[in-house]
Length: 164
Image (cartoon, rainbow, N blue to C red; front, side, top):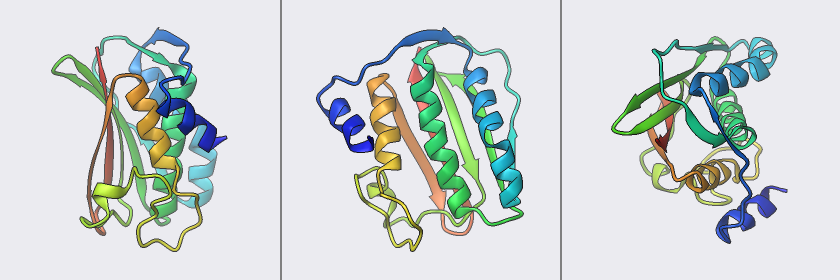
């Protein structure tokens, strides 16, 4: 299914059912979906409140899929006692939906490749290496971009930039 989604995105045929929604709703739903899982892993998952933001026009299910992948990755690389934080902001005619963790981080050598299909860096964790490629494909289908900041042992921040 993941490969099919990527193939559709490559061909410009990924179907999107767009609707206007407050950015905070996507983050609220994402936190709610993973609250129990976070508790079981001993990770604090929280939402930073945001000021009033403009509505965005997105496929809500696809955006939830983006945050599913980002949260699963954060859980994979954040030890018990760690934290994941979702936030939203607006600037320069765009809305930014961000996920930040204080996990193991990503090395500078791996950063340029993390959204490549099947790329898994130097990890021993299970996974197909498709999650971030899917994130990038869905965000690009919405006309947006994915930005990543990370340092080893300090964690990572993934920001989804969606144009207004």
